[in-house]
Length: 463
Image (tube, rainbow, N blue to C red; front, side, top):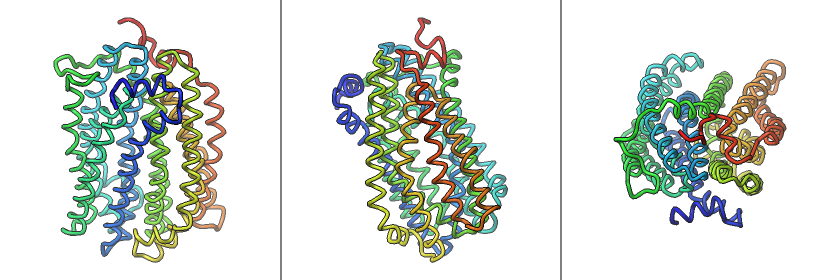
């Protein structure tokens, strides 16, 4: 698909269902491969001699990884919102300048956070209450994964710039390439060489390292419609301030959510290694179903941003409704397909009976809440695309800190339902938060160029 065709899909294609599926399918493919890669990691780790401790260690590691990745999520959201609206308003040179600042900041943050994650890993894992083999596995996994941050930050900047232009294919090709490398190396390192969780983490790092140079090449290539030039790239404080104004709520939201999940993992770990491993397995399987929903949310952000920039608020609203409908149907159908096969899927990923029993129970609750998750992710997409990242922050933070965690503590200390209380709290929090999402959506201003101006008044002024 030519670049102009992608722009036409965003701004002019009358059949929004066709346009959404055309742009979202490549993103879904990449997300699916990432989720499949996590399943492969879980499968190989699940076949090791100390599989329960290894899976529990990897499970509690993810929350800390996501806290550090929150910054790339934030700047990625800001990149899509700002660059897409500038391109929609035909301000290409300003879009190029903003993309350059985004790349510089991504590299700097990646270097600093690499060091911080490596040093913080033992301290944070001790705080969660991890001991013995679980502690050793989690620290080993975190420290090797810390070295991927520079490269994943570069990819996040590249993906934001390309998705803002409506190019969902190129990031997918690179992402799938990284995943394929990861899968092959995971089998060699974990199964062939017996390197355990360290080998799984190292395979992920090498996969991300492999695609980063390609990202830089494409960002700098003059054959691209929006390309950067090393000699002209420099930190512009006004641009950095505007990007940060939009990125901060998204990054802070992701960080707070990940911190909340770290607390959640601490509570789950108190129920034993088997329940912790079950939580990890259930999430890996359910993530397969969540991937198309996340793809739709990602495309929706670009749709909303470009159409607001082009002065087409009505089309932006319509895009939200189309994305909501597609995502909800996919979630319902997918859940109904997976529900009968929970036991068989879990058995592939664990050889421990207690873990399998807990995972099958958890999967029931997480699958029936997937349609609600599709609505939640759709709200986040429209908030991020309109520049109202503060709304996404309020929604994500309230769901976890004001609803889910208090409910978990309530079930843990005032009932006798045991670990099942965690699953109940997740279902209730995913339901209750939708009322807040509906309220905030009514406050989104789809007036042309208004969203970014509210986040940084100079965004669409002459500089």
